[in-house]
Length: 541
Image 1: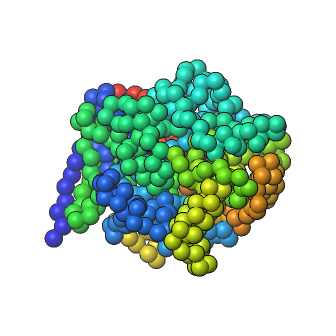
Image 2: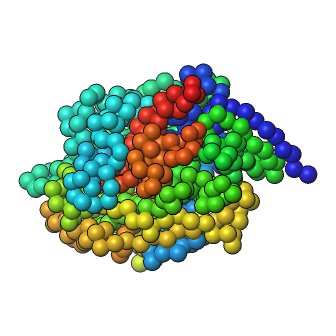
Image 3: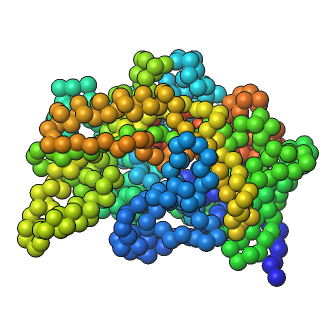
């Protein structure tokens, strides 16, 4: 027999990733009674590091055990979790656990450029954001403080700043310097990447030791993850309910959220009655919950009178390329990426050609080939043993390089998250069904990136190069609850309040109208901090 319980709060935050953790922390710090509801379990770092060390292949999810109650998608199994309905499989993944996907993010903390907020006005593409870069810039500064971003104040990377970085930059790797020297006379400007990892100790967290396992796990928490702000929220009295999945949002006829139903991994159920509900459950789980919350007043699901909920799904489709240099460049050391090429993110001809962000990898062929383990296997299968194998492995892996070009995918209403009611998980939620395809704008961007990669390889000097066939997933799930001023064409307003639901906020990358090319986490954090003020103001209404 399952038990049922009712709980009460000022603010209920659903999801404990970076967006939910920051909202919970900011509101609890101001004295609000906060409940954080997380569908997944808490994670033991030591156990997860051990699981990663023993795993092969070493995917972004390989450090974390699958939960039967709340499973997560896996990179190498694109059809196991999502019901794939489109012409292109959607391979971007996330984690359902306390701290969310910040456990296995790379740590790149990059701002959008001003033009990313005005794609419609400047290039007649997509839509404009209802806020400008200038509106968000002070919140970017606060987000960098909260995530303790390390960056180089000498270069704003095309995103004007009003405050310095809180941490000095992470040192560029030997490989970065080899790229910088090779590309010095070209248009490819190699710059240090701002990162949410400590370049010097802070509190009880040490500085980055270069463990080279940022994806999927930092063994010492030098890289930021959202458990930091979950713990801070708890220190101000927030209650954490892990292994507790929200599965229905109850709304009154006037749109006010009355309560949120949940089920726990032990089978118990209940409801949370909250004055304000904040859904921070990422670009798949947020529409999945709200679309499943069908009632007489909202037959299309909560926050979906515009029929935009779940639509405009975006990623940063990646052209992945790798090569074997003629001379040793010594990869496989330090964070996964410490430098990038940012000066193609703000092109004048974006009406025709997508902006591109080039990420230079320190991890050799780990991403495209599963190296160095795969290299050792190939050499051993070729007959090498003992000292000869060791010598060949060192000689080859010293010359592994890879680059990844992130493209600016346009929002398409047909790219969407819906529900597959033929498969229901233990939480009571239907399986997420995804229709996803790439358009000619993205295809052209991937082709341009291939040509640019080959030019870069020629300049650094390689014996051979290879390209991934088709787009690689970035893991940047954006756009399924678009923000905008018009309730007929968007899901939330500029404060991330759901249209027609005064006490419901949807925070996270789902709210992005367009995606730009910057890794989205810093923008997610800035928007969450900005929305926290609106949440607090709503408590006084």
